[in-house]
Amino acid sequence: MQINYDIVIIGAGPAGLSFACSMIGFNTKVLVIEKANIDAISKPNPDGREIALTHLSLGILQKLGVWSLVEQKEVSLLKEAKVFDGGSPSLLNFKSKASGVEALGYLVPNYQLRQALYRRVEQAKNITIMTDVLVEDVTNHESYSDVLLANGKTIVAKLVVAADSRFSNIRRKVGIPAIMKDFSKVMIVTTMRHEKSHNNIALEYFDYGQTLALLPMVGYESSVVLTLDTQNSKAMLNMNEKNFNARMTKDFKDELGKMTQVGERHAYPLIGVHAKTLVAERFALIGDAAVGMHPVTAHGFNLGLRGQDILATLVKEALMHKQDIGSQFLLKRFEKKQIYLSKMMFFGTNGIVALFTNDTPVVKQIRRFVLNFAERFPPIKRLITNHLTEASESTFPTLKKILMNK
Image (tube, rainbow, N blue to C red):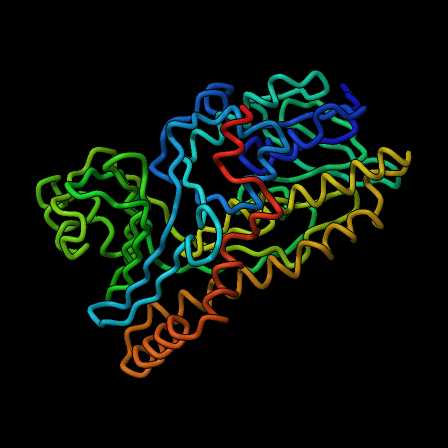
C-alpha cells in the first residue's frame, strides 16, 4: 500500500515536532512517524532534565506558537552563572545585568517543552502523526523517496527529515557516517529542595573526578546534574537519600544550606555524535540525529531548534516559489548554514570537556589560567556571554513582554 505526502519526519521528539510546527499553515502534507505509542509523546513523563533556552530559541518557540502552550509557572529565569574549578579560588562569573539582558537563559522542564510541541502539532490540519510504527528503510529516486515501514506500507515523499535520536538507524541506512565520542561517563539528574534561595544563579563545579551543576528552578528547588565516570555512577544511583542529601550539601559547599532530594534520580550515558554530512538525496538530518552534544554547554536543544528553523525557512521559500522542496540545491544551502556552527559547537564543547575534566597538574594550571583570564578580560567574557545567550534585547522580546502578550 502506497501513501503520498510532501514531507515525512521520522521521530516525534523535540526536533521532529519543532520542524512539524514550522510547517503548520503551509500548503503541504506532512507525516510524522514515531516508533513509540501516542501516550509517550502526548503525555511525556518528567525525566529530570531542564532545558536552558537561549534568547534565540525563545524567539523561535514564540514564532511557532509553542511558547504560549508551555506552563509559564514552571519557567525559571537564569540571571547569573558561576563556574568553579575544584577547590581552587578560580571563578568565572556571568551576569545578565552586566550583559544588558533580562536573563542569560530560560529554564524549562524538558517534558513541558515536549508536551507543548505535541499540543501545537495536534492543532494542525496539514500534519498527521503515525505512532507505534518503525521505519525500515528509505529509498531515494529522482523526484521522490520511498519510506518503507515495518508494517509493509510505503510512504512516498518529496523530502524525508530524520530526527530519530543520536543513534539514528535511518542515518546509517541512507549511508551517512557519524563521528561518535563515548565520554565513558554518566549524567545523573534529580530535583532537590534547599534551605537558601538560589537567587536564579546557576552553579557549575568542575571538581576532581566529577562535574556538579545546579540549575535554578522555581522557588527553593533546583535541578542537580552530577557527571561521573561510568564505574562510579552505580554507587551514586543506589545511595540512600539520607547519604545522597548529605553528599550534595557538602559538594555544593553548603552554598544553599541543607539539600533534600524531591525528585527521582535519572541516569543518562554520555555519548556525543556528529554526522559527517547533514544531507543526502531528498534527505536531511536535524536534532540529535545530526548532532548529539555533551550537555556541559546546555546547547543541544538550542542547536537542534536552530537547525530545524533554517531548514523550515528554506522549505517555505521553495513552497512560495513553487520550487522542489527536496532538491539538492535547497538541502546543500541548509547544510552550509548549519554545519559550520554545529561543528564549532560540537568540537568546542568536547574541548571544554577535555580541559575541565582532566586532573593532571599541568592541565589544572592551564584551566585556572583560562578561568582567571576570561574573568578579568571583559571583551572575552562578553563574547562568551553573547554566544551563550544567542541574542540581544533588540533581536527578541523579553520573557516579560512575551507573557504580557499571551
